[in-house]
Length: 538
Figure (cartoon, rainbow, N blue to C red):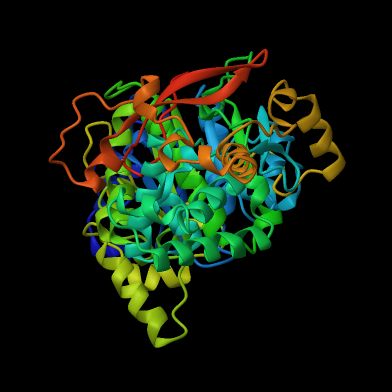
C-alpha cells in the first residue's frame, strides 16, 4: 500500500503533520485517538515507515475484555507482556505473569539504556525512563526461586486433576465420583497421599462394596487412576499439592505507592512438566473466578492475568475441560479480570475461547512449510478487514513489531494497525538469582507459605482405621469407619434424590476442615465449581 493509493485527507485532532498522510492512515489514527486512560503500545507502521504521530493504544477499561498475544518464537512476545504489565502496574492495576523461560523477573529492576533502546524510543516518540515495578515472586510447590504456591487436592478438583493425570473422559468422571465419596465420608483430600489412600481403600477387598454406593465405579478404572497417581508422584509432583494453600487474593494486591503488584510465577524449574503448570494456572484463574465479586464494567481492571504457553492448556483437553475454560473466560470479565492468552498462533486457542478475546497483538509468523502457510492464512482470517496485505505484513514484521487491533472505548474493534512497539522501561532479562532469593525471603508472604504443613486428613484417617481393624476386626464395619458428612452437618441443602451422581458431584456442598488455627480445625464451606474446584470461604 503506497501513499499514492489514497488522496490526502484532513488530519484528526492531535495528529501533527497528518494532512500529508493517506486516508487509511488517518482512519487508523482516528480509531486510536481515545480520550480516556489508555496503555501506549507504540507507533504506526505504514509503507515501510514508522509514523510516531500515530500512536497505537489500548483503552484501560477494555483490558478486562481479554486478549491474545501471538507470534513465532523470538518475535518479542515476552517483551510485549512486559510493556503492557509495566503500564498496568503504573496505573494501579495488579498483574499476574507466568514466567516460563525465566526472563520476566527483570520487571522488578530498572532497565539499562543502550543504543537499541534509545533508537527504538526515538522512532516511536517514547520518553523512556528506566524503572522497576513492585513484584512478588512465586514458584509451584517451592520448586525454584519464589514463594511456594500449593493447592489442596480438594481445592484443585477432579476436572483439573484429570487433565494433569492425562485421564480419559470415563476416568475423569470416575475421579469425580471418588471426590464425591471422599466429601460424603469426611475424608479430606489435602495432598496426593490422601487421594491415593482413598483410591487404594476403594480397590481393597474391604472397600469394593463402597464402589457400588457411589455409582458403580469399576475396580479396573479405580486401578488405572491409582497407577496414574503413583506415576505422577514418581515424577516428583507431590510438593505442588498440600498446605498451606495459596490464597489467590494475594494476586490482587496494590503496593503502598499505589502501583499494582506484578505477581511473577517462576516456572523454569518445571518446564518439563507443561501440563502441570498450565493446569495450575487454570486453577489460579478458576479460584479467582469463584472468590471475586461481580463488578460489571469498571474504569480499570481488578487484575490482568497473562496465560503464557497457552497451547499447553488446550492440548489433549476433554470437552468438559474446554467447555469449563470457555465459560470461565466468558464470565470472569464481569469480575473485573482480564485474561491474555500467549501462544504462537491463534489456531492454538479453541474458537469458542478465541471469540472472547477482544484485544489482539499478533507478532510475526513464519511461512517456511505448508503447515506454516496454512496457519498464516487462518490467522489473517481472524482479523477485521484491513487496508494491509496481512499475509505479507505478518511475515515481514521485525522483532518488537506486531499487528494490533483492540476494542475501542465504545467496545467496537479498532482498525488493524501494524505497530512498532515501545521498549519496556524495566530490565529486559532476568535479575540475579541471589537478588531474587533476597526479594522472596523479604516478602511478608514468605512466612505465611514457605513451610509446608501436613495435618490429619484422609491418609491419616484411613491408616488409623486400618490399624484399628487389625487390632479389633469386629469394630471395623465399613459404615462406621469414618463419620459421614451428613452426621456432622455436612449434608447438601435441597438434595434431589432423583439427581444423578454426576449432578451431585457438581452441586454438592460440604463442610470441611481445611485449616488450623492454634491447633483447632476451622470448618469452611466448599462447593464444586465449573471445574469441580472447591470454593473457599475466606
